[in-house]
Structure formats: structure tokens, C-alpha cells
Amino acid sequence: MYWCKIARTEKEFEAIARLNYQTFVEEIPQHEPDPSGMRVDAFHHENVYVIVLKDQELAGMIAFRAARPFSLDRKLGPVEELLPEDALKGLLCEVRLMAVDKEHRNGRVFYYLARALSDYAYENGYGAAVISGTVREQKLYNQLGFEPFAETVGTGDALFVPMVLTRERFEHSVAARFKQKRYSFYPGPVHQSKPIQQAFLEKPISHRSHEFKVMLERVKTRLLTMSGAAYVHLLVGSGTLANEAMIAQLHVLGEKGLILTNGAFGERLEKQAKRWKLSYDVEAYEWGVSFDLGSIEKKLATGNYSWLLMTHGETSTGMLNDLNKLVEICNRYNVLVCADCVSSFGALPFHMDGVYLATGVSGKAIGTMSGLAFVFSNTEIMASERIPTYLDIGLSSNNTVPFTVPSPFVQSLENALMAYDRGVRYDLLHNRMKFIEEEVEKHPIQLLANHPYPMIFTWKEKSFPQLAEDARMSGFDLHYKSDYLLEKNLLQISCIQPDFEDAWTKFMSWFENYRSYHNE
Image (cartoon, rainbow, N blue to C red; front, side):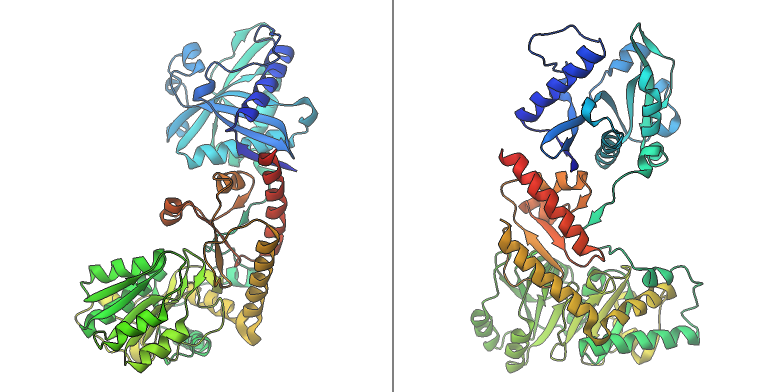
């Protein structure tokens, strides 16, 4: 197995120094021999090393740095004066070294290096990389996407061509055609099946047309059947917009409520409520800790609260909060339940018949394009001049379509909802979650929270803090870059992507190799 990472350990730096010696002393006579058999680059402490390994052994590396002057600056003057305009969009870095062990010069390692460099540099704000490419390997550099931008420099056996690589040049290179498949564990966007994609290839229709209204009614009927709610209102936007529209209705009530939080999205609800200047108290729990139903009931029994706001599927922890029991408690005290179901709706079957308002989206578990947000209700919502127009779900009562809704979004949603006929998609996601729970038992994976639901789980990785970054360099996209995850050093894996089973199998094979490599 070939895989990529950033070199960070002394063991890796020693292996790089040995490869440097073999390449730039024994093979290319750039430097004098040394009995140590190691060659440490003069700018070692400024370099970032992207390495490719074959299982546990170093197969190749690229070293680059951003500190000026570059070696090419010294040979040519400021390289900006010679570079094409498209190479000046972003930071510049210089590839100091590129070497591949002789046993692995099969093309694949060079392609891995080029892709890893392109991905890593691009994501860290670099617009281009320059390199002194040895003349005898110019064809290879061209295949990797490097292009000459100045005349040859050097003497004798050490002749080099100043070359530049940009993201666009790499994407049009031979190497890009052979780059490995990427596997996504993101909770969105979801890679879409052909029937869902097809909706975006068809000619859109007017949201004022009879044809559109008929299609919209079909979609609403499916949503109401799935949810058990009496009404559903569609908005063009994200789950945050749906929650905003839900909270706007609490603003109209003008009464005091209780907000429950045990993760980032519960805390986001509280921040949204604060912006609306609602009157409320907060019952806050540590991330991943279940709500204390007895404590909540005592507060509601005081009669001080008219509504309760909570998150059902807490995306940040992968935890499912007990909506049914909270509805039972709230109904005893005539408290209206409002629930953020953005991550849970479509992930597992449940009914909203006891809630006042709840939210969902077209992306996430349903698996189509993000862009449609739902607010479910069990009471007919009337329009209110106290709410900004676009957030007023009362305007869409009586089956009216007050604002533009792109027909491809609705058609795509309808196609995606067909997967729920006879519970097929529910069964798929349920089986995936059972599989994950078994895998967690087999492997040393520490989950942040109990009570997972078949959409996402949160992984508390303590042994390998760079796991997610290294996995990404090897083609596995874990969810870890959201601020709320970075702050707590958490990573997430979602099971909603179409190729989850294949992706998980390959990821676990990579992870076992990764763990063995670091535990040696």
C-alpha cells in the first residue's frame, strides 16, 4: 500500500536524509560524499516534507519551503519577475528536493508526490511552487505538471531547468489523470447517485407553473408521511435558516422558554435565540452527556416556561437526544417542543406528531443537494409582520409559493425521497450504523458519546493527533475542519455517502497500516 503524510518524526527525517544522500550524492553528484551516508538539507528546519511510504518504508519525498530568498532567487533574481501571471495568485513556495527510492520508480510514487504537494500547498494558501528540475528528468517533471519558466541553470552533470507548478497545471497533467480516488466521510455534501444528479441536467420550470406546484405537493406529501407532522414549509437555504425560521415563531409567542444544550448545535440554537432577544433559560450539559430528564421535568413543572428548544441529532457529538421522552414531559406541562432535526430527519424513522415545530434539510441523510430547508409544524402557522419576510413560514401556508424555489432542487429531492419507499434507505443507514458499532468494538476507536444514530459518529482520537490530516493526504476525507471540532481535537465519520462500505474497508486497511507504522 502506497500512502502519503507529512514527515514529523526524527525517524522519518533520518530516512529522508538517507534518501537524499543516495539521490543527491551517489546518483546526482551535487554534494561531496560523507561517511555517515546521510545528507541533511541546508534548510531542513524550514522545510515541509511530503512523503510517500510503501507500507512502512519510505518510497519518496518532496521538500518545500516558503522562506525567501529561494535558491532560484539567488540564481535568477526575484522569480516573480519571470513567472507567468497565473502563478502569482497566492503564496509562493520552492520545492527544494524531490527524490524517489530506486526500487519505487514506477511512476506511481512520483504521481502520489505531485498530487500530495498540489493538495497540501493549495489548501495552505500557496498559488504556485517553483523547482530546479534536473534536465535528465524534465519529461517526468512535465508529466507532473511542472512547466519551464526560464533558461537552464547549472553546469556539467548538474544542469537544472527552472519550472513552475500551479493547481491548474497539475489538474491538466498526466499525473492528475492517474490520481487515486478520494473517499468522503463528510456529513455533506453527499455524492449523488445518477437519478438525483439527473434533476440538475433537466430544463428548469417556473415555480409559478402548475407543473411545479403539482411536483411540490408530491414532495410535501412524502415529507409529511415521513415526519408525521401536519404541515411542512420549504425554504431555499440551509439548516441554519430553517432553525432561524423556527426561532422566529418563538419570537412571535413572546413567552419564556428553556433551551437544552449538549453540543455545538444546541449551543448554536442558544446563540440564535439570543440574537432574537428571546426570554429563556439554558440547561447546559457537557458535550456528549445525555440530558437529565428528571432535572428538566422539575424545571418545566414550575410553570415558568412555555416552550422548549433542543437538538435531536446533535451533529457535533454524533449523539441522538431523546425527543420522544421530552415530548411526553413537555405535553404534561403544556410546553411547546421545538426541535432541530436537521441531522436526524431521514437518518432514522421517528414521528414529529407531538412537537410544535421541527426542522430538516434536503442534504445530510436524505442524500441530495443541500439547498432546501424544511420547517415542520403541527399547528397552522399564520403570517406575522413581526418576522422578516423571508423567514416568515406563515407566508407559505395555503400551499402558496411566496418566493423563488429552483425546480431542480425540488425534483432532486423527490428522486431522493423515493429511496425511503418501504423503508429501504432507513434499513441501509441502520445496517451501516450496526456495522460501525461492531467495528468500534473491534478496533481501538473511542467515541465521544453514546446513543449514536445512523448519520455520523464523533471520534476522540488521542494517540494520533495528525490522523485526519494524514488520512486526507492519502485520499480519505474525514470531517475535522469545522471550528467546533478543531477546538476540541475531534474528528467525525459519516455513513451517508453512497460508497460508504467500500470507503470504510479501504480506510480501515490504511488505518491499521498507519497505526503499525507509528507504533514501531
